[in-house]
Image (tube, rainbow, N blue to C red; front, side, top):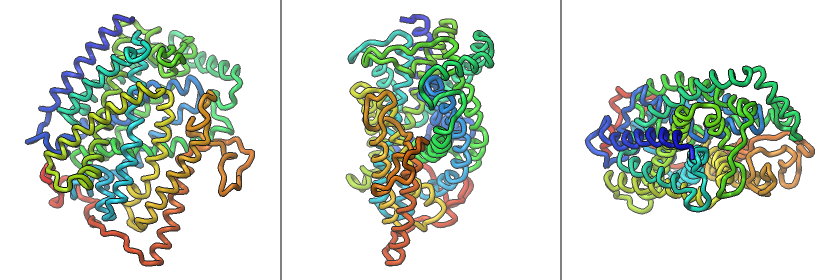
Length: 544
């Protein structure tokens, strides 16, 4: 047991727990018994709060342990996270400003609400809602992977249920203050989380390289290590086999992330369009941080870091690379602060994700199909209960399923959420696609994407299916025809699947238009997509 680290970690964890409960009174509206207040913080967060909230939402605990771990294992490919976030912000800047406007005019809380209003189809909205919930679940589980990596490094590495007990306690606390305070809890805690993360990473990238001869020696050592391994896909530079994967993974991940319901939750909680625009300009500061963080994977090589063996599975846990590096090279008290930064970094996105999934359940399944006359208070109650179910579902996921498998499932989640691109993102600009084109495209994209993922074995050879998201072009087939047979170049499955989705959606739309099939009723107007906080058309928060 690392007692000093554990005491510092526990003290900071206690601080954010207190903040989580205090948050119920912070910028409080008339009541928390309304989704606008509980699930969207009253829709009135300003630039600073939104910056910390969205940053805390997009840069998760898993990011802070997995990106350096990927660089440690595969080299340059791990840096895909940098162009991915650079591409992300213009994507968010353009469509999500329109999403904010139309959602404020009509009182939409979820992306499925928007689809319901845009196309007048509860079935299409149901597809979007279910996709969002299922794709978000493994993402929440991955926050636990990051938190467990820290707990394991501090010595809490038992086998069986007792090994997961500290994690369970942490999530009980998270569940209680999220239940009470809603989105205000992660918004307030994000200030602490981001301050700690910036402090730790800046100290790490200045202090640690000086211990190992500077960055030049670190890069030389990393390259020598990669050259000594038989794998052809690793190295400090990309090669012919993984360049396409790098580019498509960056683009596909960026498209997927802004479609996740939790990304939209942070945006809809903001006060106005200018708040979102300022944030999209300022958020690349996190990308700089991410680049510095990724290089710690190379530093860990120079430090001779060995991943800790997970006592529950008997296998090395590569996600412990950065926590072990901090534990080895920092004084105990500062390592405790670093562990707290990563641990608290799990709570903020996990809370936002569970709230977003709960909103989807409440608005697009419970109210649509189970209780059409639900009052705002009943909706809020249902969302609170659903957020508990989602959180403990994620905990059960980690306890009963190999956590390494949850990483692969998150990649599957990215492929799934990409299939909502035509119905959600493109629909913000045009209603050209037909409802049945969108449904058919979703079915084909989802089906083909899952089929391609099913064919991919894990890198360690232990699982023959669903072992990753990088597909060799040789495996691409069209009704048995392999147009790129023999190619070892890899591509991200999500991009292939969404391309098929769009192609089918276009073809079915053209047929449906030719046959003059009814295309639903659009409840939105052109002006709705440009309304700002001073517009008379906005529906006041917590009134519907």
